[in-house]
Image (cartoon, rainbow over all chains, first blue to last red; front, top):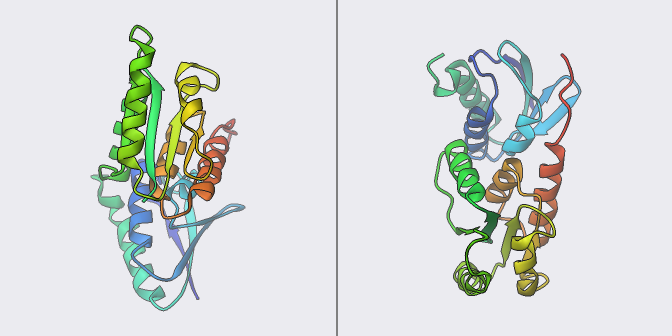
Length: 89
Length: 129
C-alpha cells in the first residue's frame, strides 16, 4: 500500500466536476483507492462520496492506494490534482 | 444496464439531467424523461409512461424516480410498479440522480438503496469550518 498527502490547489477545490474527473480516473485502476480528510474516509471510485469531503482550495487530502497498479494510480491522481483538474486556475 | 426514467413536475427533470450531464462529463444512456404538466390530459401520460418503460427495460429492470411523494407524477406511477423489475422512488434531487446514473452496474435493489441514501446524506446543515 502507498500513501501520500496532497494539497488541493485549484480555485474551486474538489467540486462536482473535479470529483467526477477524479472518480473517472480512479476507476481506470484495479487498485483500491481511499481518500481521507479530517475524520472522513471515502472511496475514490464514488464521486458522491468524494464530494462529502468538502475539500476546498488549500485543503489537504490523504490518498491511500492498495493494489497491483498502485504506483501508476498515484502518479495519475497527483498529476490531475496538480494540473488543477484541467481547469484554468 | 438498469434503465432510469424520471417523471417530474414541469421541467425539473430536464434541468437535473442537464446538470448531471455537465458534471459527469458525458450524456447518460438508458435514461428517459417525462415532464408532467397539469394542464395536459393525465390519461395521455399513462400511455407515455408505459411506452418509455418498455423501451428502457432491457431485462435489468427500470428505476423510476419522481419528485414529490403523493403528487400526480407519483400517483400516476403506482400502477406500473412490478417489484424487482420496475420500482419507483421519490424525493428526486441532483445527488440522487448522479448516484443512480453512476452506479447502474448494481442490481435494482441496491441501486435503490444507494440512491436514496445518497439523496438523504446530501441534505444537511453546513457547519462553520
